[in-house]
Image (cartoon, rainbow, N blue to C red; front, side, top):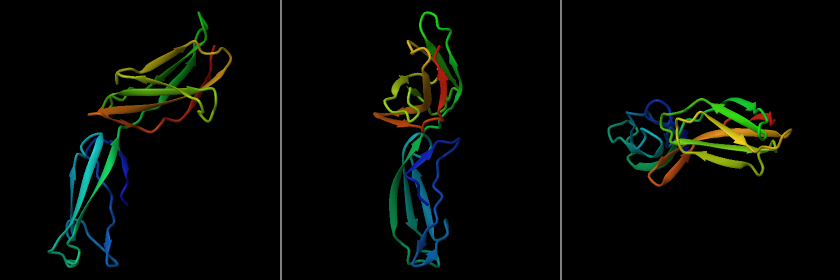
Length: 170
């Protein structure tokens, strides 16, 4: 079925559709044709479905258009380590840099497992691969997540959040 959001891959984003009309399943390329606009990268894409008058199901002659979002591919935390404790408690988050169709990253951390009242930090370069939080509370457990983002025009598209990792600050 049609998905309102897809994740960027290595090629054009396409929808996997199963269309029916009048109780019959329609065949792509025979009963209808698909055309896309803006589906080659992160952003908002448009899909147009147009019925084919040459098919056996020629009663489906209409067309319709749907838009969907393409979000950037996410990344994951590869390491979360407590700092040395000098001069203050800290921890360092490390991740795999995601440079394709990505403008930067956003980290969030919280002392609550459910991420309530999380602090967020936007890192505006896709070449960053680590971040150190100085001034953490020593002995406190921090839960950390990361996601990527891509700025397209005036819109920002976000990946999903990574799995949580936790660390006790030193």
